[in-house]
Structures are given as structure tokens and as C-alpha cells.
Length: 301
Image (cartoon, rainbow, N blue to C red; front, side):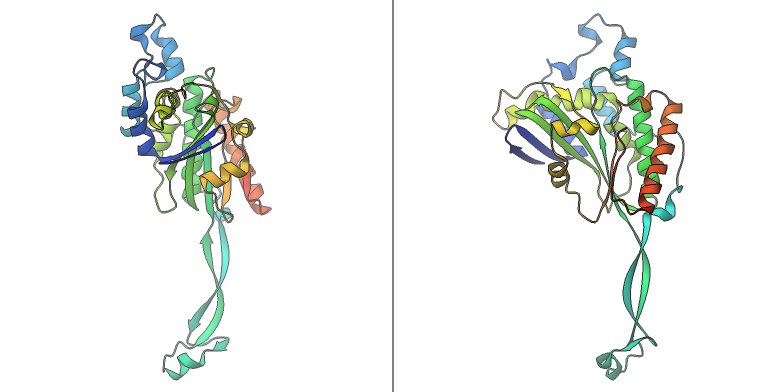
């Protein structure tokens, strides 16, 4: 885990496993992370609308590791295959070519000529999506959002070198503002679709994330850091952290193509049909942008 405070902004960076396990350590069993039907009169159907199919904290921890799969809206792989490749000039030593390398020639090595050529190199694409939403977003929207994120990440990773980050950004938490970044996949790893499914589950934020709000402050000697605040995602993320500081904290390199993905709160994730329409539009936006040499995509609207 990395942790840094800049004024009232608290920045945290973890792996997926660290985020889940430290939440278990930080959470307060009598607070919001543990809210369930046994201590209230709310009907289970209403709770499921809010928490999805993990009605308790313990059930959400299970969802993090039991293969929960949010890939719910079908396969759309390889549609933008060639657009995530580019040519890189390079020199190779060959038997015949454009320029003689004298030391190599005198050594008797027949491969003593330099010849310019190119090779196809996959682009480096950094995908960032929000895990959290405000209270009014239904569990069904989270499911559709998770399906879209999984398909898009899977599709792009099939043809590009990808890194995937998930983030939680809120005001009125910790010292005032909080941005937690969870590494879902590094460049040398395979896409873990169930992990994307878990982090886009409504109870991941409303259980696991709340556990951080309840106890992280105490863990660093700040017992007053307790509050659930307000989610700030998409274009509202700037209320928590600037794009420049976000990129620095997430460690987005200058040569990466950055795809900044939305949270579940936008209307596009209302149902499977609207989600599929959004996904098609997102692919078209990325396709057109790549043709024009675009390096940063914000797919929030």
C-alpha cells in the first residue's frame, strides 16, 4: 500500500488483494459497512436493489474471490484489433543490407550488414474506471457497468498491452477528500474478468470501500477520519483530485494511451440495451480517436 496526504486530500494506492484484506482489518462491525436486513425493517428486495447479490459484508468478501463474473453483455472482441498497433523503426544485422559493420565483418560473422526495418509493436493502453457511485444508483446499473467494463477491457487487452486501474474518489471522507486507486492488472498480467466484476459490484464500494472510510484514519493515527461523504466520478472527479495529480498518482506514463472510463451512475447503464449502445459508441470513439492520434479518451458522457 502507498499512502500520501496533500492538504486535505488523502491518496491511497493498493493491489486488489490489499484493498480487500485491509478493509477487513479497518472496518467497524457496528457501522455502515455491516448494515443488513437483520437490524432493520427494510424488505430484502429493497436491499438487493442497493447491495445486489451480496447483502452482507462477508458475502461481498466472498464475491471478491469466488469468480463473480460481470461479463454480462456478450462478446465484442477484436473489433478494433489493428487500431491498437503501431510500427516501430529498428535496425537489424543481416547477411546483406544497407551499411557494413566493419568489426563484425572482420570477425568473420556473415551477419555484418545493418538494414533498417520495422516491427509491429502493441500500444500501451491504461484503462481507468470508477468503482463508486452515489446512493441513488441501482445494483442493476452496477451490473451493466461491470459488463461493459469487462468486455471493453477484455477487447482492448486482446490486442494491446494494457494496465487496468480502478479508483474510488470522494469528498467528505478521510481528511476531506479521498482518492483510492486499486491496481487490477499490470502490463505483464492477464485480464482477470472476475476481478473487474467484483470491483464493479455495488457492494464492493458500499461494503469494502466503506470499511476503509470507517477505519483507515485510525490506522494512521487520525481517529477523526470517519465519514462516508459523496462520490465524485467522471467529470466531477476534479472536485477531489486534478487530472494531473490523478495521473501522477496512478502513474500513467506519457507514452500510454489513456482510456478514462465512467462509473455506473450515467444513464447509459440503465439496462442491457442502453449499455450495449454505449459500448458500441465507446468503441467508435476510441477507433476514431486513434486514427487521429489521440492519446487520452474521457468516456464519461
